[in-house]
Length: 468
View (cartoon, rainbow, N blue to C red):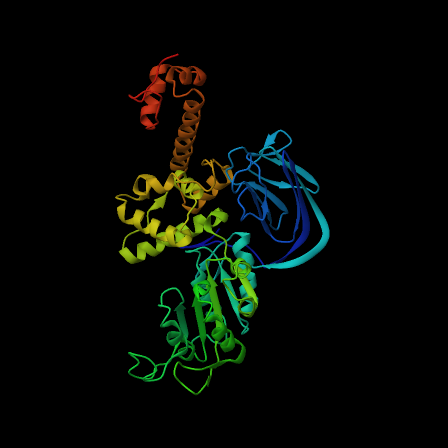
């Protein structure tokens, strides 16, 4: 953190070239045998078919673990799996591994071995590009790519879940290109009825169909000289796809009902929440159009895959809300931040933004607590059985970023420890307060007081179980 008066700025460092070696994963288990090589920065391991390294085994969680490559090396990260990730007999959550290494996901042993082939991937030193924010390697890899391609006219396809910020990518590309200041037209392929979409895209002449009372320019001609963003391109019907392909190849547009074609000079950025390569395999998207759009492909990671970006995003959205509602931005406790880290964010950054704004409006003091947030949503987890974890370095970062006094920081740490300790103790004792008190080495009455104070549930209907 760099502090200058009231200004606080996170500095990551200079841009680097990250060397990505090819590596091989080999799985051995009861009925689970798989070997696959990768040369990418992030690989997901799990039983879900969408995982990069999919393993069909009952002991493997859907999104069990991941391997990330960053400036330090190869990280093995457990995604809150039910049966854990182990190296030898040691259960690990987040650890750097050497090559070769054997680790275990559930009951399945996986061998990790780096091979010789390597490529260089540019990692930006910046923590933002346009209005996109992120200090994670995943986002800085995207920033590094966008910094290189934005000044060109290359066609870009952005893939990512809803709410990840695909429109922000298009806007940032335009902002950092020679077409900045020129028209920027956003066309949502899913928001226009099938019988009107051709007219909306390419325009029409008067009388070409019922309701065409005058000539009208379509989205492509409106964007002439600038950038067109084709959102939800995966929703485009098969019969219209060849017409779009011709425009992309010839840079000529024929309005509906017209005998003339018009030259068009646009940069095209398309986006989808689908995996278009799979749509091509399924026959619902033309292969030639896919390759015309995906000259450069940007894969936006969902928010749950980059939890290290949450503090920066939360701070940004709190400041946004402060400006919008003319109130001082409240602080956010470490406990609340950890719960936000462990939530899966199915709506991604868009959901986080709405979440923070709602919490900002509902808070009555200078801190946002979980009681002001959507409790039902917070019960959902990133993976099958993930639980909030206390990470010392993360807590210290939280203290520094929020400039907490020593007394407040100490109290937060104590509060967090108490709740975590007693939650675990009640789990292992089946909610029996007498057993929990004996294990804790304190009087039963003291244990009852702590449990009531923390609002924890015990085995009995009254909330306290004393039976042995």
